[in-house]
Amino acid sequence: MVKKICAVVIVMAWGFAAHAQRHGIGLRLGDPVGITYKNYLSKTQSVEFGLGTVSPNWHWSYYQNSFEHYPQFNNDRYVSHEVLSTVYLQARYLLNYDLRIDGMIGKLDWYWGLGAMLKSTQVRYAFQAISGNEPVRREVKSDIDLGPEGIIGLEYKFEDVPVSVFAETSLLIELLDRPGAVRVFGGAGVRYNFDWPR
Image (cartoon, one colour):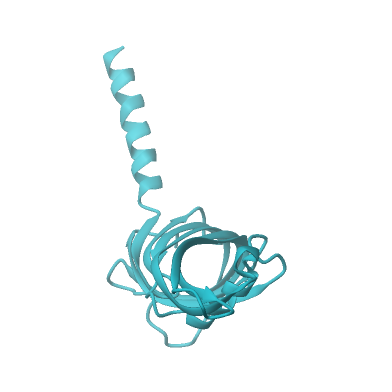
């Protein structure tokens, strides 16, 4: 009985280890900058999750133009703004395909997929009454963008080290807070892979 239990435990541990080795975690640079986690479900399918942020100076004109979309500012004029914080959350389902190049060492894939992006930004606006007779006032607004994301990219896996590099671009269609608006994002990064499907 003890031998059977030990055998079951070993088989379960082996199966878990084999599954756990199909993970990759790394750093993404671009828009956004952050941590990326990828789970290679098979040779052709993967899921990815991202957590990131971006420099306060990125998308400056986007937030400046956003001032006009807040109805409470209809009688005010924009003076300036300051981005206090930005957080990105991403979840994606990806399909991966081999790109075979003669003589190439390592493995090159291209991938595409669909996902969802949530971006939350805190912006402090400085504004003044249109008449100009009142002092400058300030108010913090939450700018939340949410919508489906389409992704296309390239990933290169080195032959002798469990490291991959990637570059990609994605398209977000906003459902909140400007329904129908289309935004483009891009980035590149590196992951350490706990093995991957061959």
